[in-house]
Image 1: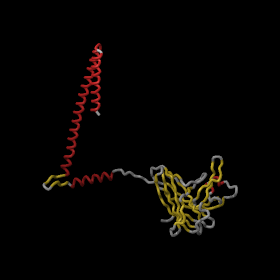
Image 2: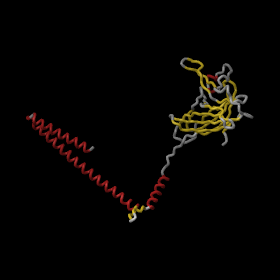
Image 3: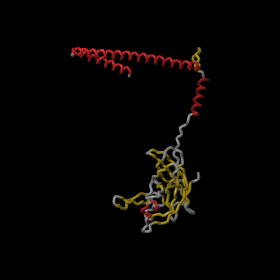
Image 4: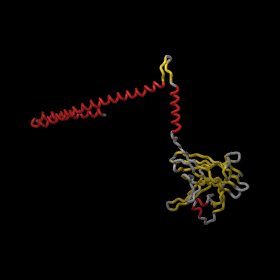
Length: 303
């Protein structure tokens, strides 16, 4: 870079000198001005040459000192780690072992970068009494429009809930959690799979996705328990029933309301998949026992 600048300055000096020469030739009455330009150009060119020589000399000195320091660093290592003998070079094993021990000590005391995973812990599992919409099979207090009951469509029912809590030290502030549920019989044969489990919500309608922050607790709807011991895996979809202005009113329809499970004992496996920004952060599975007789019981399965 310095050489390029010196060349540019030198070219500039020559250019100024040529301009002065042109003034002397073309305008004899202003020769004094032309000689001024010529003198200024020669001075600039001379200074650029001196500067280039100084830079070249400094660079050579720096390279020479760098080579000497490199040789000085190599000589002690060669003296310590090798002994020249007739049979060849005998490596000083003691020096290598000492160096290895030093590296091991440094590695032990080096601070480890701890990456804490997001952890969802299993909480209370239970069966609660609630109101159920007899038409749609939806838990009534999840869907505000269904809570208004002019036709006495709400009936008493029982719902199996699973509770989960986030309790970790991961730096991720929040994750969006989805879940799948599998109902298996006592021989661990798959009876039914819910690919979109619903989380309990306190307002409006429920969702298949909930957000977990550190310390948050969320509940999931697992199944409806009929009065005669039938089990309805809680899965469904929304259908449009009417439009009010620009708002479409939708109603939840339980997909399995006409095909309940009739076993008396189940293994319920819940798989939670937590993501943030479309990147998978957590995937955990939890097993529960759901027993219908002598009375409905839903609890965490013993390991």
